[in-house]
Length: 546
Ligand code: GLU
Image 1 (cartoon, rainbow, N blue to C red):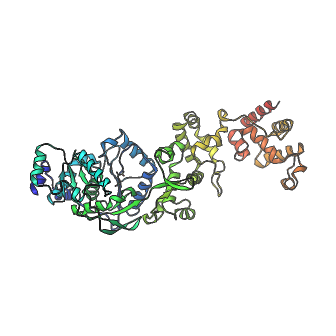
Image 2: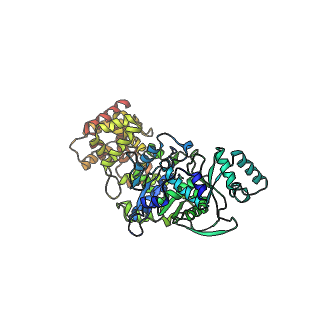
Image 3: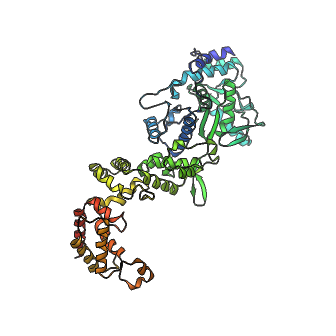
């Protein structure tokens, strides 16, 4: 056996012991979770990455453990230039703080390299070890042979794969192997599975609970013909050497788990704990389906940035998805740091999560409503500069003005909830800028002369020294002057008895000043806008009525 391993891996000089010494067990407190995100840089970062990332991050940091980022870049075909940077930046944008691993400005940590392509030598040490132990062997089957085998299996209605008597190179004599190597035939390294598909065993997953799974009997590929490992082999080696205690990953890997368990055993590694996260789903008509990259733009993380959801809102929403008790906790602790929430992986829904856009919008309204005006101003300006540059330039030109606008109705017990995303801002407060002010459209139910009379009297009687109460008294005086009522109760009891009310009168002014039938408190709007500027708008509206 020794000779076969040397024949296959003549370049390997390091030993497993060297690697054990180089990557010693981490010195962490009892119960500390060491976990990772191990995405493949496909150029597409999605909400599922964030769900996994947040789960891993919370598990690590709530226990005084470590979160690291490993880039799984062994699949050169799926490589997209710049994808690693996009990945790192997006995760950072959403506040997933890695303690070590791949980073844009240089990877850091003592358990690297953190990019799989830089770890080829390490994988080969363990590949050699498995060959020495008789747990792995080279297979020289060609693509044609393998597909012929698959066809035969399908025709016979057998399980497809390289197993049992289909494992053609499993017990080949050494001369055959030597001859194939001497002939320069390409080979892959296969695992010699000790499993039997008629046997089952129990396994405990932290999310899925106790599962009964079937043993793996397939001799899966460990190293491809170019010497690059498959995900399975790299996962075992990396998560062992990086001293991962918990593997947090998507449940699409669950079917491979029996194979992974065998691999850890064959390599003599302690099995980490597994946290298999269910998929993100959405309602499609009456049924649920997985979010799809092709059909659902909301799967992409960039979508949330472009739509203008603040990071805080997305974070908060994902927490409500992950732990069903989060919302109650949040209600009891409205201003607490989310990091104080007793997050538990055990509370994750084993079946996955139902993504609900309306709920996200709701959460986002609350998050924005809680932010101080200064923060709203800063985040909105930043967003607009990227996604609506003309608007962004306006906002950036006078931040104090923007802050004053967003201070209206903020703070206090019942803050205004006008914005779900930054995209909603222009519609809500664009009228504070002349460029975005809509032409006044008065309710045609009222005669133009009545509206004109109100606007004219407002301009004649207004006094810039008015406080809110005095200002409103003048509005009431105009109301009575034109024969409308200020008695809302009487009006409600018999609307037919009155041509209109004080609310209609304020409405005329509101439309004249804001171009809208809905706005925050009008007196405050006038104060922020400036008395004369508001009057100018009333005058212009009056002109249009003539
Ligand atoms: N590269 C794998 C993926 O993106 C990683 C799975 C894992 O976290 O182990 O699905």
